[in-house]
Amino acid sequence: MYSRKERFIRKALAAQKYILSFLKPREKWRLEDYPVRTHKQETANDTGPERLRPSPWVADIVGWLISVWGDTEEEAIKKLRENFELKRTTDPQIARPGTKAPVQFTSVSRIERNKELSEDFIQRVLKLPWAFISDESSLWDFHEEENNNAYFILIRSIYGIDVSDDSRAIIADILDRIAAHQA
Image (tube, rainbow, N blue to C red; front, side, top):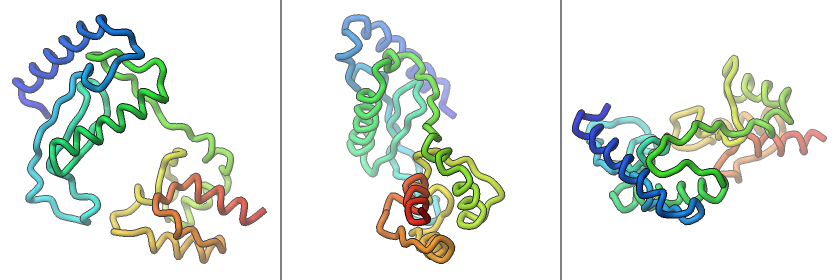
């Protein structure tokens, strides 16, 4: 994926940030203490729905599985900072700068609370034989359309509830609303 030169730069930057991280306590680490790289990607030939087209700029923390996109380099870094700050406030054991962050899977506790309903939802609304759905999964994850209207219509006809007011369309939220409506 990366050129030999870019791999070397990324490793060198990670090593530098790792060494420097010992000069600050963990609670004072900020995005600037981490090995951040940005690059511009070619997007002229990308087709498909507008919402799925990549932005030209990518920013990431070396060794982490976090990449963000923006229309400008500054926008990509701003979004990376927002993701980093969220991570920093929710994870007191945040990975040391220059090291690889462990992969963390999102919770499924809310989905499990409505297990039978979620299985029915996957088959009748998403029209899939099975799917992995976490507490953060959204209807947006299951199609390429510009809106969720087709799913909203199905949910209304199957479960008798209108969830079109939820632009994020988080499936766990939708299942909670359906369960409350059925109670």
